[in-house]
Image (cartoon, rainbow, N blue to C red):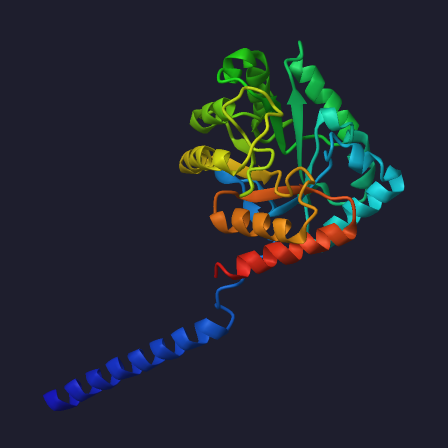
Length: 303
């Protein structure tokens, strides 16, 4: 009897091992196989819990001149082409003068699937009234992410306290869903990395060091690859603090006309693992297609 019980137990144990092995084998190629990430995946933006496409379409190239020059019809077609490819993140700003263009372009698109980010420059006297204007111009009830724009000083949070407090109030009222900052100097970036107030950082990143943050407290200081290490150090701190991080200047403010430069920058930025998403200012469907292809290729190498 004991021998029969032992034999049966051995049989069951052996069967369990075989079933487990079969399941592991099927997981590697079946429905549980690890999926290769893509440029248009919906990703989570840091601690916000908000979802957006990994690749966003920017509307502020050369302060928005490039996108505005497309005209209403051209801009509408571009935004809708991007959406059809899976790009749901649209980046704009008051200073780009593209709010009304975005409003017209997203008519007919499901609002709940879009992530719209805008930016508020300077220190308006009544920030909440400015936010209401933004919502009217964009034709939306809420803005997914609103940033204080182009910070350059080490104490920008004190200088812009009125704006920061207003953004907190707006978030409480759910007329914005997150707030943050776009920095244009290393001192400003360093401050942003440590602030718990920051939900979202829009950071300048590319391996060539083109148009990235420098120690000089000015938005347009000349930069090169020597400025990259301290920038990456601060972005890593942002990640440790669970900030949302979106990369910009991936194409060097449009300076990377050489395909090799675009490939180098996209590959570096995507494979660094330092950004949740990236935004690129496009002017044609071909540019969108190229960016998606390059990002997909870079992501495939990380699997």
